[in-house]
Image (tube, rainbow, N blue to C red; front, side, top):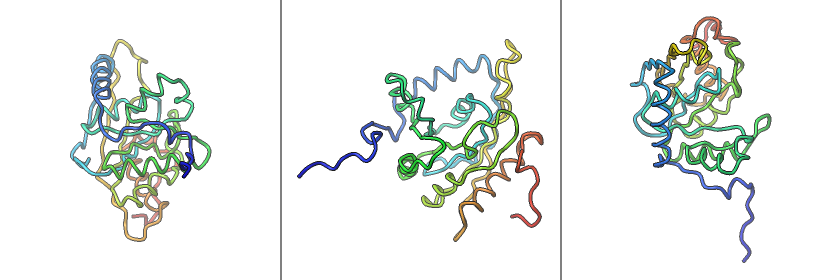
Length: 226
């Protein structure tokens, strides 16, 4: 009997679903370095479940966001990364070992969604930027519903994470950049809730913790919204 062909070339790659020694070393080294340039203020760590599947949904301002996100919590975060980052062999092997996996933006990437679901099946933390791309300081844009769909399918909570200050990195060097990370209470899917309704609850909760000029399209909560 012939072997079943791979449906996607990414199926041939190895992805870790747990913390690796390499990851521990990198997080330690990066954390040590960033203490020199960043004053990190973490709030609400008790809102993150200590184990089990959880979607961590954060606003996205700069490429630096993933660093304070991971340094803020003890659990490893597994991230989607744009596919172009995985074209350099040595680099892509390294970021795979760090928990990243590729996604093709601008299209519905079924493989990336399946891999994200597997991360949750392994009881891990899936880091998501619901907006899909950086806001670059312009405020929150309309969120995609992928994070909500994954949480609904896995029946797991979404923990909104507000990140404030990463757009100021190195602007006042050698003064350290003050970055605030707020973990908000978990939002659980309701029976029969649609992905859009769940995503709206997450984004409005997230917007309330951001400065007014960073709330974007979620600045005004509709009357009667719960």
